[in-house]
Length: 229
Image: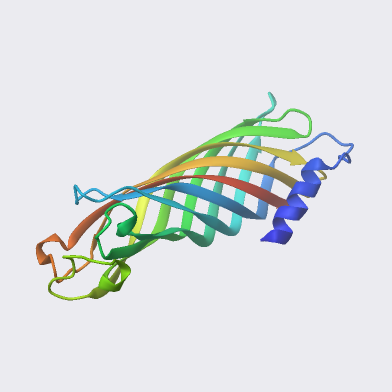
C-alpha cells in the first residue's frame, strides 16, 4: 500500500506529461489505497454512544469509459477493497463504572459506480454515485477488571461476535491525470452510507437486548493508479 501511495503521489507531482491529447475511451484496470473515517452507532439501544471509526484499505478497481465528441466522459467502475476501518472501544470512557467493551469494523467492501466527467487536456475531473456492499464485524464483551468498581456483569462476564453484509449507497468526486496512453493516476473523495445492519450480540446480563441495529457511514480519500488497455 505504501508503494502505491508513493508511486501515485510522485506521478501527480511530476511535471512530465504525455504530449498527445488524452483519450479516456476504453477499459482500464488499477489499484488503490485509501483512508476512511466515519461513525457507527447501535440505534436499537438508546444508551449506546456513537463510535468513531477510522483506518486504511486497499484493493483493485476496473472500469469502462465512453468519451463523446463534446469531451464528456461517462463510465462505469467496480471496486473491491480490503482493510480495517474500525474502532475498539471501552464504555468506561463514557460511563466511569461500565465494564463493557467492543469493536465495530468494516473489513471489506465493494462498489459499482456510474461516473460522469469532462476531459480537459490531460485532466479528467468527475463525479460518481453508486451502490456499496460491505462486510461489517461487531463484538461486545463485559469484563469487571476494566473498572475499579461496577454493578455490571451481574450474571456473567462474556464476549460475543457477529457479522453482517450491509448494502448502501455512495457519492463521490475525483480527478484523474493521464500520463500516457496506458497510465493515469488521481485522487477521489467518497461518502458511503451503509444503512442499517441488524445483528445479534448475546448478552447474558440483558438477554432481551440481543438484537442490535448498527448504522454506519464514513468518508474516504483514495489514491488511484490505472492501466488503460
